[in-house]
Image 1 (cartoon, one colour):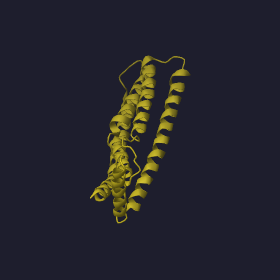
Image 2 (tube, helix red, strand yellow):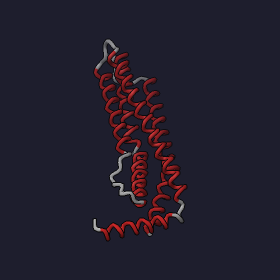
Image 3 (tube, one colour):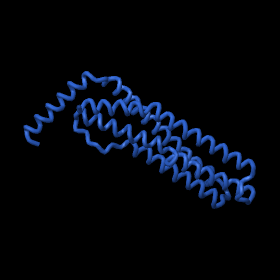
Image 4 (cartoon, one colour):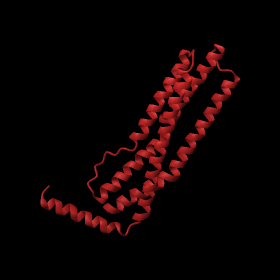
Length: 200
């Protein structure tokens, strides 16, 4: 980079910083930091709980049992695979493709990208979280029922469990989408407006 280019970039950064002083930066950045903390906290405990659940499921659902049928084994393997898929989805949603060139603009663009990825992750919670869990739990319930009765057709109790799981997952989907619209979308919109004002 030539000296003139460096001077031009520096002048632009000074102009943007001066413009930012008149914008509600502190409140927005405080909200962004709070959301970033919540995301790290959520990811840590979700991955911890899923990994622990998969480990306990492997030990008590397969390794310590004398006779485990193939459907129950498949349920354990699907749960472990679902745990891996969910953990990767959570970790990948925190990665940023934009490089930080130490300017106010790039920092804001990075935060916008982070929030957009998290919003997309939450909007697709049915695909990366609920569906794998539903499949894993369904196979496990059928495996347990088959081991007890020899039948793959669930009885009234099994149908009640399936219905309860469906209701819980449906409520979870609605709650996550509602929380996304209530908490994430407003902060993202404010950050995008700040970015537009800063460039304007």
